[in-house]
Amino acid sequence: MTHQEKPITRRGHFLPIEDHGLIGDGTTAALVGRDGAISWLCVPRFDSDPLFCGLLDHEKGGAFSVAPEPLLSACQYYQPDTGVLVTRMSGPDGTVEVTDALTLRAGADLSEDTPAGRGELLRHIRVVSGRVRLRVSIHPRGGARCDPHGGGLTLRPARHPDLELHVASSLAVEGLDQSFDLRAGDTHHLVLSWGPHAHRFHLHRPEETLEATVEVWRRWMTHFDYQGPREAMVRRSAITLKLMDYTATGAMVAAPTSSLPEALGGPRNWDYRYAWIRDAAFSVYAMGRIGLQHEAEGFIGWVLDAVDRAGWPRVLYDVDGHVPPPEREDPDLSGYRGARPVRWGNGAAEQRQHDVFGEILDCAYRWVQWGGPLDARLWEQLRRLVEAAGREWRNPDHGIWEVRTAGRPFTYSAALCAVALDRGARLAEVHHMPGDVEQWRAEAQVIREAILESAWDPDLESLTEHLGGGGLDASLLALPLRGVIPADHPKMVATTEAVVKHLGAGNGLLYRYLPEESPDGLSGHEGAFLLCSFWLVDNLLGQGRQDEAMALFDSLCDRANPLGLLPEQIDPASGAFLGNFPQAFSHVGVISSAINLARAGFGHSAP
Image 1: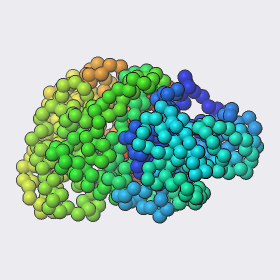
Image 2: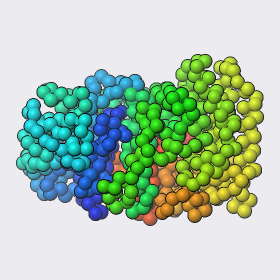
Image 3: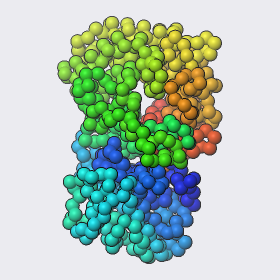
Image 4: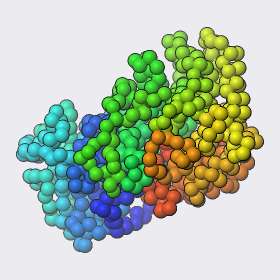
């Protein structure tokens, strides 16, 4: 494949969000810009205080940059079927490739619930042609004390007093900002390591470490099982979701970043580096459908342990299954392109969202279908959630979109309570577990009827966001996907048309809802939410509009950056990426819609 370099463009010192790639090791993740700068890295894990966050403040955030000076053009690509990223950059007299990886232990198995990462970032440098003056700059947020040690450098970041970093390099690195004159054929490496595995005097063999990391990724991908439209995109989506898997516990973060804005300059900037029950359940279900089923087992164990500790299912947890820190605003960072405030923590942790019952039960049901054991202890945990769903569905909550107003009896939440009751009844019946199966089924039917009657607005000719009426909500498109209302039910067909008409942002994009009609307690606006458009693909398919579904799916995949990565949202006017990136939800949409299209008879399409 030819990788075409393009000039570097910035807006106010910031690269476009889409000009970044993701690397990770199952413990943390980093964003690597097309300019050779790592402007996002939290260590030692996803939700730690960031070591580099120039993505949120060009001057104060810090970055680890390796690039020619001056840098004229660049491109990025992944080594196939891996999380190893190559950035090719050209200056006026030559070209260099930097291969980046958060390295993995040789022989590690990414299907095991155990850390595979080595606690190190490897940057392998190869001069492809000509001569390059290469600048190496390492500046953690808040600065760092730098001391020569063991043939490299020891860094003690000011904001991480308990964290000692070590830099090893084949270059004569003596400080935090240096330039080196290199020529074609030269190869070098930089290794930034942390934690107990930062061996100062260890003899690094970076090529071997890189080869081992590639092999671990490719061995994991041998389990991948999918043939159909956009296979390359589906493969990349699987790897991207795995890059958000905290392998030590089975938790999956919603996105590896915080505070990338839903609208430029706006206040809707949130921290997504936590494990939402809903997002993680969507992710492991999607992965299970393409042969990567082990992740479901890890998630089930993690979420039920977390529920046991809290006594009630929370909306989100940290990756250890504990309550995340309170949401706070960071006054020192200017935000991506001036989008304030920058936030750490997430206030949604204190909300009630009743769909979590259905998310857990649906994921557990699928896992058991894939061969997972259902013993008495696991069933007792699940049964309590089924019974809670039967009690709670009429009560107000804050919904899938986490509004910051008073709660409402959201339609999606009620629908997922019906899912919990339905899946619970199926599990109890098939596996001869105790429970009032007939009552659960009857209550699920009551919920379906309540949705069709109470959420229906005859003037809009659509189901609405909450029982008793309200605005339009694109989450209604998920009801057929969860088996609550068939896609071809007359009221679902009408709802699909109404959502496209009233929430359409053009070219197949959809807003989640309109804040002026569905108050969410926040100022400002947001972009189009990609997952909703993938749900639209599935509804069109279920309504027999197959060619429309395929065309929309292709157009959505075409919005990915050259690496095959998608954000949370898209600016409808410009096509620019918005929101946290990459977003698990968006890649779940790729996988789920692709499978549905393949089952409908669509074969391979454009790469």
